[in-house]
Length: 139
Image (cartoon, rainbow, N blue to C red; front, side, top):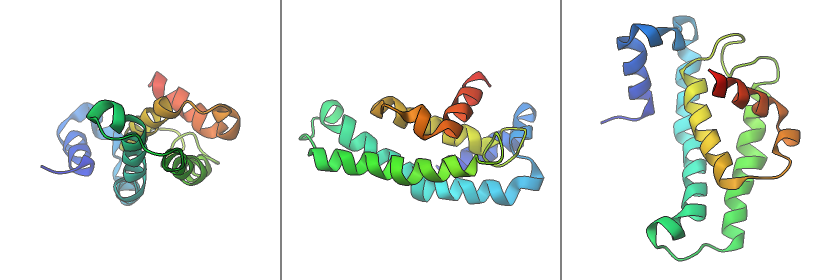
C-alpha cells in the first residue's frame, strides 16, 4: 500500500546506492514536489491517458475532440509551462547539479505523456524540458 512517495522513501532509505537521490538538505522541497505530483501532475497525466488510450485499451466510447484537446491543453499550457519555469536556472528540478527522486518521478510521468501526444514544436516551446528529458534519459 502507499503511493509514489512511500515507494520513493523506501528506496532512498533502504538502498545505499539510491540515498543520493534524496539528500536531507532538500527533504522539504522533495516532499513538496511529490505532493504536487500526486495532486496536480499525476491526475493531469491520468486524464490524458484516459482520453487518448481509454477507448482503445478498455473499450470505452471515444472521447470528443474537445475532451482530448482539453486534456492536452492542461498538460501543455499549464503543467509543462510550470516545469519549464522550474528549470529556468538549473539543470534539475530541485538541485542545480544532481538529480533527485523528484526528477525520476517527473521524468517517468512526462515522458509517458509526451509519447501519447507527439506534439509538433515541443522542443521549440519547451527547450528546458527537452534538455532535461535528454539528460535524464542518459542518467
